[in-house]
Amino acid sequence: MRLTIVLIVSLFSGLILAQEGDNASGTQSCDACEVSEKLKAMETRLIDTENRLMDADNRLKDTDNRLKDTDNRLKDTENRLMDTENRLMDTDNRLNDTDNRLMDTDNRLMDTDNRLKESDNRLMGTDNRLNDTDNRLMDTDNRLMDTDNRLKESDNRLMGTDNRLKESENQILELKNKEHKTVIFSAATGGGENTIGPFDTHTTLIYRTLITNIGAAYSPSTGIFTAPVPGVYYFTIFFHVGRDHGTILRLYKNNELIILTHDIPSTYDRADNGGNAVFLQLVQGDRVYVQLRAKTHVWGTDYDTTFSGFLVTEM
Image 1 (cartoon, rainbow, N blue to C red):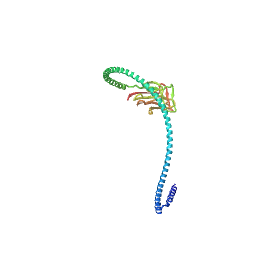
Image 2 (cartoon, rainbow, N blue to C red):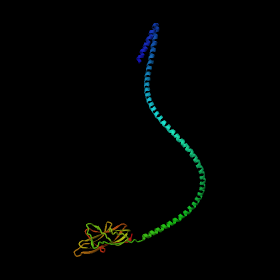
Image 3 (cartoon, rainbow, N blue to C red):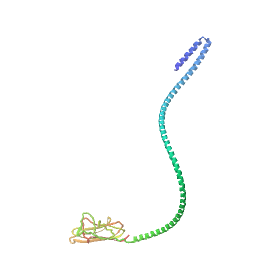
Image 4 (tube, helix red, strand yellow):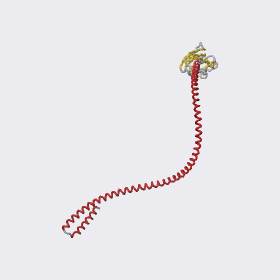
């Protein structure tokens, strides 16, 4: 493009020189210089114009790109606008419905106002009655204060009575604690004229025939005596035995061996009686029982083999 402009300028200059060929030779030389300077100035302006034109082209391209982006954004905006218009139409419909409901609410509000005025009139009557009630309530409060004072006086007297009652209860409890609990039992093995044992394992001997059981501390179903109160107890065990087997009876406190008694058969002494006794200090819940050792036996009747005990003193 620049070359084209230069050629045009050169051609234009040649034409100017040809037209001025008839002029004087001195004048021709000066005119050529002037034309050359103009030509240079025009060329400079042409170059500047070309640069500005290129810059304008670049700006135009940028403007085109921005215009395309603007078109896209405009299309998006138009779509959003259409959606907004649709929503606005829906809002208008809902607003119309709200207006109708508001009119209905206004009508109901007017009715409520009328009813409220009526309620105000009734409330004024109620206020008058309430004032009368307040006066009566004040009188009742005064009477209640007098009653409270009398009640406080009664409470003070009642507290004194409670203290005296607690003192009496403590005295009664102290007297009850001083009462001596009676615990006495005596039982036999029973079983007719048969022997009990021998067994393959050590066995708790159950004395099933109750002779005495004051305090019910001995169980004829388990053969175990359970201490009902803490104190010192006295226990005895007696047995009768004969025939070919010996006897070993052990008295236990819980799982602790306390005493034992036994008999070993011999050729010249086929039947024997034996026994033992002990004082035991027990706490409430301690268990005392008699164990028949394995491979031994006792004579089972209501009279021969017995287990007895009683409370000597409480601790």
